[in-house]
Image (cartoon, rainbow, N blue to C red; front, side, top):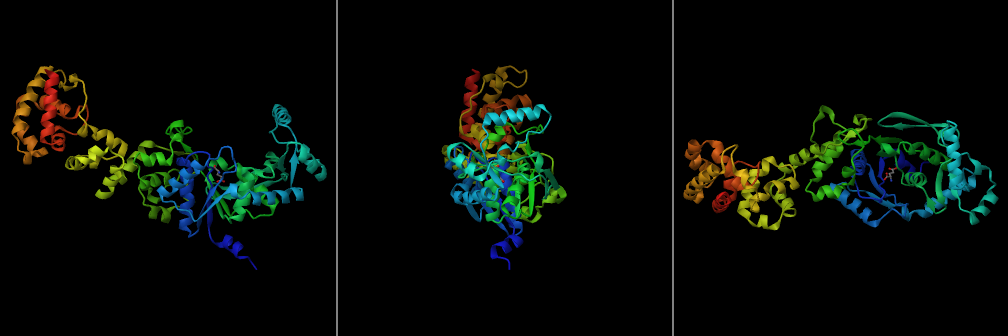
Length: 478
Ligand code: GLU
C-alpha cells in the first residue's frame, strides 16, 4: 500500500521556489516565483518556499526578509516555508548513508593538484573531469584520514547517460561521464547546493522543478544524486529562458541591481509587475498584453514558454504600470500617491485634485508623475531666454505677458478654467500670433520646454498663482 506521503506526490502538484538569500530579489528570481506559484494555483497544488541558505558566509537574514516582503507585496503567498540551515541533520543523515554504501567517498586532493589535473586535461583536448583518484581509498583509511586531513565528499558518478522531461525543451539528455565525480559536500555538515536540493526535493515531495535556465546543467547532477540515494526524481522540470537586456545581451548591472522592492518604492504596482513578469518568456493565446492574475492562473501553460532568451524592456514595464495606474480607483491612486509625493503637495487639496485630473490620462509611473507635476507645486527656475518664442526678441515676450496679465487679472475666479482662460486670451492671440503669446505664457507658468498647454496650466495653478508667475516672468524680462 502507498504511504500517504507517496500518494500526495503521485497526485497533487507540489512546486518550490528556492531563492538563496545572498542578495535581494530581482526580476529573474521573482519570475521564477511567479511561474511556480501560477502552476501551483492552476493545479490546486502547493507552493513551497525554501530558503537555500547553506552558504553561511553569503546568506543574510536581511535578504531573506526582503524576499519574503517582496513575495507578500506581489501577492505570491506560500503554503509552506523551509530553511536549509534548519535541516542540517537531514543532510548529514543522507550523506552518511551515501558514504556507507560507497556511492560517495572522501576526496583528499588539494586544490593545486586538482588545478594541475584540469590544466593537463584541457591541454590534451579532453573535458576537465575529476580523475577519481581518491575513489579507491579504502573506507577505514578514508575515515581515519578525514579526522586529520582536509577533505570533501564526492559522488561516485555512474558512467551513463541520464535524461529528463523538460516541459519547455522536451527530452533533455546529459552524459554523466562528461561531468565526473562532483563534490556534494565540503564536510558532513556542509552540504553543497546540488546535494541539499535533492534531499529537500525528495522530503518536500516536489513534483515539478521550475527554475531558471542557468540551472539546467545542475539537473543531471541532481538526478544522479537522487538515484544514488534511491529517491524518485521529480515528475518534470521546466527551465525558464534567460532574461536578456534590450540588446539581447545579458542584463545590465543597473537592471540586475534593482530589486522588486525598489520597483515598489518607485511606485510600480504589483499588478503591473506581475503582468510584466509573466510575459518574460511566456505569452497567452491571442497575444494579449494585459492579464489579471486570475487570467494568468487560467491561461498559463509551459507549452507557450519560449526556449530562447526573453527580452526585458523597461519601457514596456513603464507602459504596463501606466495602464494599471490609470485603471486604479481614485481613492487607491490617492493613497498610493500620498505615500510617495511630498506632503505639502497633497496638502493643497483642491490644486492637487486639478493637477491629478490633468495628468491622469498621461500617467505612466509615480516617479515620472512626480517629476512632471513638480512645477505646479514649486516655483520653477528657468533661464529667461526660454521665454522668447523662436527668434522673437525678449521684449515682445515682455509686452505680451504684460497684456496677458491685465486680461487674466479681470477674469473672474469662477471662470478661471481652461475654456474661460482661452476665451479671454483669444483676442490677444489673434493680435500677436498664437506662438508669440502662448509660448512665453506657458514657460512663465511651467518653466519648462514641454508641459501641458498654458490654459491647462493656468486652470491647475489657479488665478492667484498664475498671476504671480506671470509677474515673475515679467520681472525676469525687465
Ligand atoms: N537557490 C537557487 C538559486 O537561487 C535555486 C535553486 C533551484 O531552484 O533549484 O538560484
